[in-house]
Figure 1 (spheres, rainbow, N blue to C red):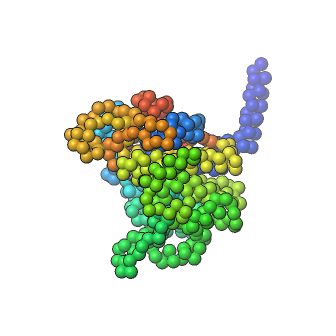
Figure 2 (cartoon, rainbow, N blue to C red):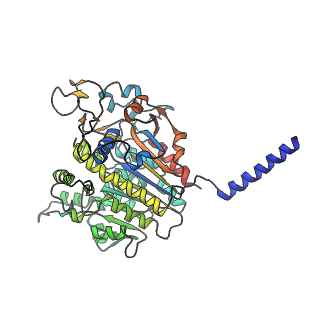
Figure 3 (cartoon, rainbow, N blue to C red):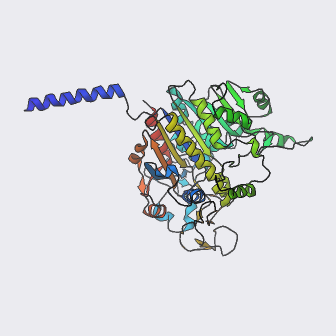
Length: 490
Ligand SMILES: [Zn+2]
């Protein structure tokens, strides 16, 4: 009897070992696609969804198997170790009153995009402004660098400047996020892990139209204009069509041909869209609802739509470069960077248009996975780096001093839901501020290794769960790095 059990045990062990050796880490992902809606908190997410669909739950990613929330707080630059268990998000404090939405602790702050991108892509809490560096300016190994070690290609796509904080934190190391030129040159260096860099920063165009340059332009303005491409000299080289071993493109036609897989696909690409600061959400209108085009025209004046690729187009172009002759897979980070700008401006119409451009890009990515790859080899993670604007429903507070934001002297009523005004219409909201907050942000994941997020739950916010109709469970932004690292390391 005992002997029989023993031999059965041995057989199982042998079978188990066989599978383990044959299959390796069963959770190894070939590809990872991270999509970050900058400044896209829960209510921004809901506003965009009401506009696009008229109801929550209709976005394809809202039915992903992993629907969680994520904390985003950064650390201070004080020279003290973050004590174990210290967290910058306490649901009890947060839901007490609207004023607490921007509160830090002795050790933590409301994050900016630099610190949160570093947390998401490097797994370390840092202070605001740092790119791929600790608060005391030590280099952090980033997910792009780890991926490159395993032969994966990597890339970043954004609709704001190429070396802006969110894409920067994916591969660069710089103590000040404002050094856009230095960061760009790191990203485009021969030693960079990146094969794809796409976004804005064009020195001669804004929103698709040529920038009028004065004959006597002062040096400061000129320097600023070339800032995102690392200076005038480097732009002169890029204009020839190559920079280091990257091909360089800029016209909408070039982006579209690359997205369609036409012509020779280069090994490495820099795509500088014809805009300095951002690409408006050219696909923010709703098909079969032509009146939504008016909303776009009203919110984005003085644009040349025919010169600007959409975020979806850029993403497909990036995927074609990353998958060219590449059996090892890739990591791609795609940012909808201007949801944040719209919410800073307390402009909900711009916010939902930006969100629509972003969510259509997510659809493009989902289609790409289902047609060209599979959920068995690709992991898709969708999140935000922080909430912007303290968006709540109308009359969450009384704006007693009538200055458009919640501040001292205003009376807080209660947290109210934003108001759905139906598909194609901007929902009614109240903005509490024009800055970032400490609120939880949504996190969705699907594909190989997605369930690893459930092993990293940091807490449950019952009220958030009731308010936004999910479990209320949340992870931290650093967990995104740890999950991705676990699934890409064989
Ligand atoms: Zn911001």
